[in-house]
Image 1 (cartoon, rainbow, N blue to C red):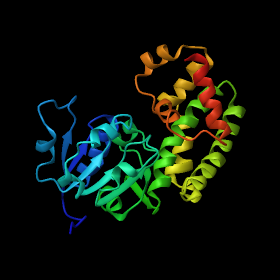
Image 2: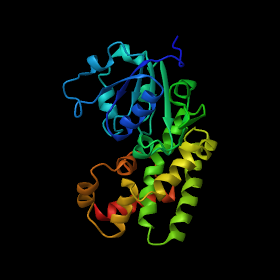
Image 3: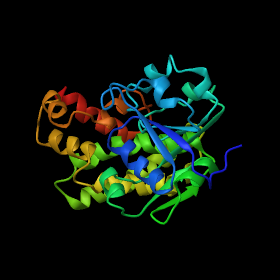
Image 4: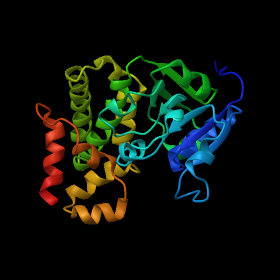
Length: 267
């Protein structure tokens, strides 16, 4: 059994901004960090990056994660694994992971790297044990599905908020209604609606919908300006809310439908 208070070797899958930010937290907590990322570290393969590792943190973009896990080694599925990627709507791809949990919250990568305080919601004590310190607070909620859905939906709603950004009143009302719709979505899909009241829910929703550097928010602004979707994608590269729109349930969710219609009109 792992002792969270002792240094561990932890492999982070994905060395992008958020993966690097989580690596900074874990390094501060005296853990030994290894990365797997064929773009950032092309000379390090998965076997090398996970050799003698004690745990796995996943920050691979959600759009490519299912394909990546299709050939994922069985030995790694036995390790404690924390999903930190946002944008998924189905946890079945982790059904054969022995020690799976999820972490999510309003943590912007650069702010974490700069040492600013943040709070995450985690579905299991393991994440609390390895991430919590003076900078990072962890709240536990045994609702991995709800935590995951909050991280997916908030990106969609951020696009909608950006679309309404010409009026602060409209933006505020949109966020208020988005939170209510998020609660309904979780309840309808078998998750705990109260999860939306935590950092992974209302905290991340407000942070993403009001941060002018958010790619999803900026996407909404560009849609309001009449920019073509191809032009927006060329500018922003990755827009998690767009890929989420293609997967989530839109029936009976007016705000999700509204965002979908805005996107469809310029596609």
